[in-house]
Length: 256
Image (cartoon, rainbow, N blue to C red; front, side, top):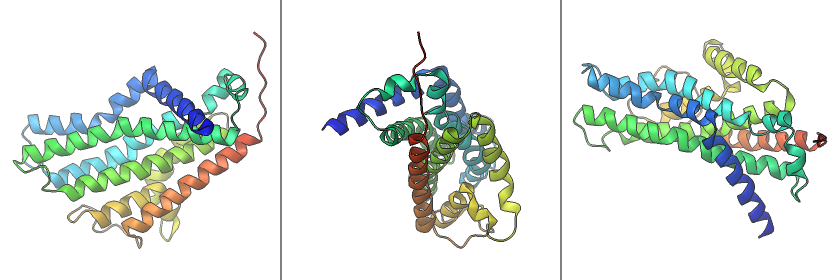
């Protein structure tokens, strides 16, 4: 019960911190991009606005921009900002281990970003189906595909950026390079190199789960289950590594 209380307190504090600061306003507005785009297309009465166009827009804009930016901004703040603000020494005087602190903060992060990212996906999908006069469940495989990629993508990117934040003093710069350079160009590299990216497995999930999708020519040999399993395993490994690195770090409370 004592461990549960500690987890509840740290997770709750992290959740409140990520959802009630100015950061939450910026990331929340960015997370609304799918809704804004679909509503704009519906208002403009675009003739080609249907589920395939929805996917064509969501893959590059949501998966490769919104998802990465929201996870990057929130995950790098979990440990690094407390280190820079010198608030960790106070927190670590409580009976809680450093690795446990990393895990609890990561759980709080994951809940926070999913609260930001999942509702806009559902609303944008609903707008698309409603515009075509279709039932909400007509293309439910598309919704499930994007929900699945949002969940495992948030977990994987968050763990990666969290790990980076305990390694370097400027995690945002490194995260931007990985998220918006490496993840964007890796698909064009031949061989198995794309398997060293998160986006490869997210696209593999979409290709396998969605019956009619624009990823028919995407080269992958992993199905949705294997791809999701790899991302979950990598997420767990990176959080453990982040906890190990954090365990070796020393902090001192500055004099008031």
